[in-house]
Image (cartoon, rainbow, N blue to C red; front, side, top):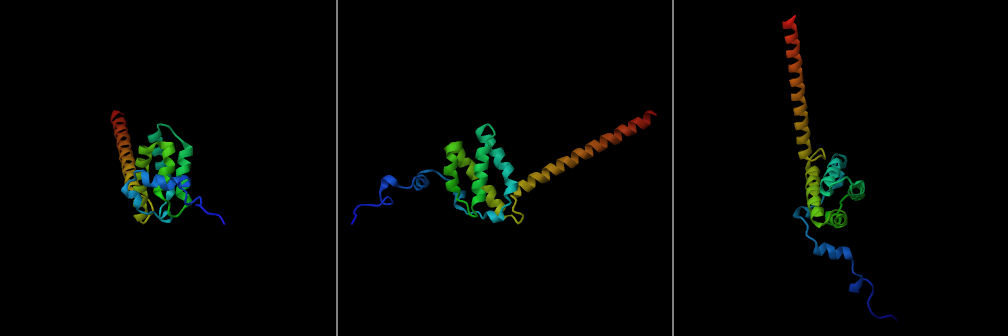
Length: 153
């Protein structure tokens, strides 16, 4: 008969992830769960790429795909584990900032009937409004130009 402790009981072989979960600082918003079935991830992917580029100062497709894969892999992804995994790529502070921003977007998308964060919808409306104003301005300039041309003739 063997006596002693198993690998699970021996502190030398403890789970590093559990240790990090206790040690690291996490945003309060990461306590909320997100059902990825209610979120249209394709609308958030461009934001993920843009935000990672801002934080790193350069494009990094590997980190971007890493985040996307973690979000797609599970219906209920664990944001705290994601932050731990991203800390190696982004540093501690940037990983925390990124995950806080991302999680708030995902939470708002989950609450939205369309699965798109309302913030994105408002931004798109503003873009369309500006385009229409620009088109009106161009149309007015063309009319003015044509009127000036007729007056000269």
